[in-house]
Length: 351
Image 1: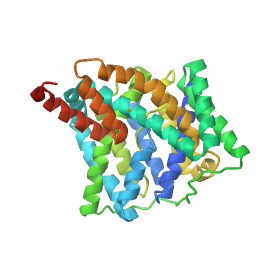
Image 2: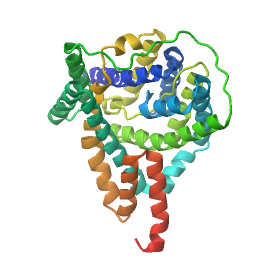
Image 3: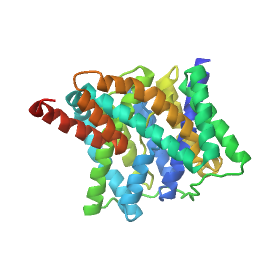
Image 4: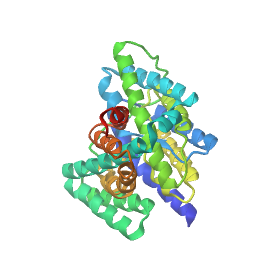
């Protein structure tokens, strides 16, 4: 039964990632090269015994897809940003950042991410009410009855996808797949440098917040330097051949009985799907709004309460509150920077 839950968790995260994978295809990133990233991620999780897998992340895909004027610039941003993040991880700077910023800022970032997830869930539901709200309702009821994220994402995605099929809806991404592996030569100009720095800023916050949240779900410590190393190497391998970014995510495999096995299984299966060119075919029946239920439960019920209470319950309540608020309305990196600014000036103004 435990291994069945491992498999269910892996399949659920794949279903979660399909719409975001289609988003990557819509920006011109190819799926076969992206499979290389999942292979590197699986190897990294095994090598470092880490419970935090990597997968498609909508924030990074959108950032790279919109900042680059063409595919060469987009791929170069991903490559150079990943190279910088790998260097940060190799020298152990991310764990030092976690130690330096302190628990109020770390918990505030995670609580802010939880609010972001709940807001995104309702935004999805507002765009496609039948699918989105059926996903939220089924996800909420499933979690209330089982207290299990694996069952929550499985049932909410499957039931809302059935609703979409019944209403004859199809995925709204409509991307076309590009075939093969072709080496792409990175370029460096001002736009690429600016985009690479933006990728680094986003991924510093995402690795800390998303990696630690998955670790909390699994009841395990996640070394975010290790996460930065294999997620960055994955991006470098993918972007060199035309693939999209694959980053740290908040993963339901963390709630599986064997989270490392479940995460590695998820990445291996996703690599097979991408190598086989099946992403556009499978994603045709999984609308993006089908993950609204999982995002709502993960954000509003699992992530916000425990992290907000930790961020606001100590002597650094103002620091935690500012971090949480800025993260919720922008991104984890800006939230972290805002929290650090308040932390530095609070002794001067007597807060």
